[in-house]
Length: 119
Image (cartoon, rainbow, N blue to C red; front, side):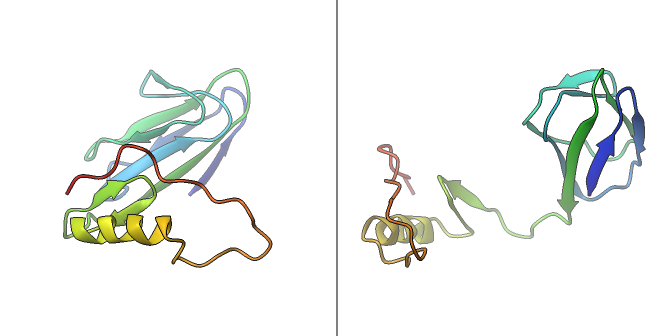
């Protein structure tokens, strides 16, 4: 959900948003139930109770994301996400060997982090 509030504006977020939800503050800080959330920050929202989102002295844009909880645990390393750790290792190998394809016209390649994923 794309939320745009004017300076001083507020929005009540209902208790039953989703099983899992997060709020990303795009361009300015906001308060959520009186707690300040910095700009350009993703905050995991607590479940089961209503909250009040409020803009400060300037207009603000936020993105509310969420949905049902995933059935399996996910492993995350760098830009890779998988239910299986060995798939992340394979993805890192494929990235390093440039087997993931190329964006037309792009010549730069971003190297993997020095610290590797440990399964």
